[in-house]
Image 1 (cartoon, rainbow, N blue to C red):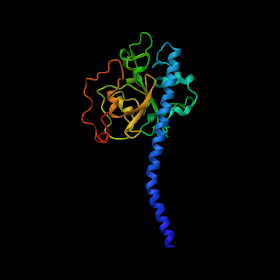
Image 2 (image 1 turned 135 degrees about the horizontal axis):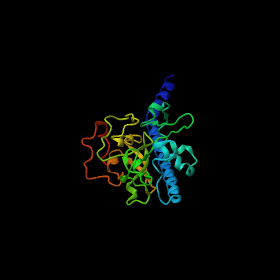
Image 3 (image 1 turned 90 degrees about the horizontal axis):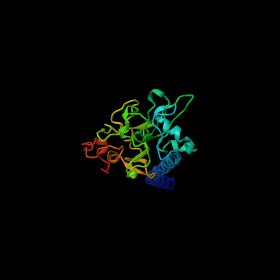
Image 4 (image 1 turned 30 degrees about the horizontal axis):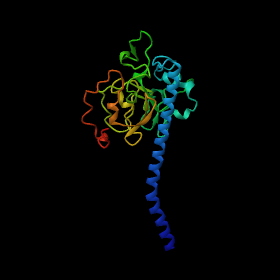
Length: 249
């Protein structure tokens, strides 16, 4: 009996040592898969742009409004798994609370037209229609509208997000607390839709040069979101307590 108890104790100790390492490995594997999904989104945009004179999908077309970019890219991807980061598994089913969060999938669709995902578009990329002065109440003069932008590697395209699109500004303030809920319909501090610690203080992003990499949460303010994004404006200071543990860039 004593020998059996010793063996059980040894197994328990080994499990306590191995389980955290296995959980970390599992989390890292999901982050790699997420990056591969973002890379596939980049390829989809690349093919769309090739067929549409280097332009980006319109931000005002389609029957679904803000998430029309997913409709327009639909011919260029077939695997619905790329709609969701492996870390986001909980689907929001109530339309009134369609926005997601760190580990939630947004779901603004209807019974007749189900839509869901855990990635969001940089809304400043949307192509304005001829004569259109604003896209979803934002000035269209700031929109890229094309994939042929200078320093495309600095321009975020599709990212881990709590909503289907967002129009960040340098003056946006970070969430006051970790794992905040993204509020549907709020049009200020929109960078919060991307500022979710989905991958240990970072998110995954595809960029306008069709590359994909991890982006630290504080780095979000240093990306080139739109044509007139003013990097001379100081970033938020001080950062909220929950973000202080993460590196500055």
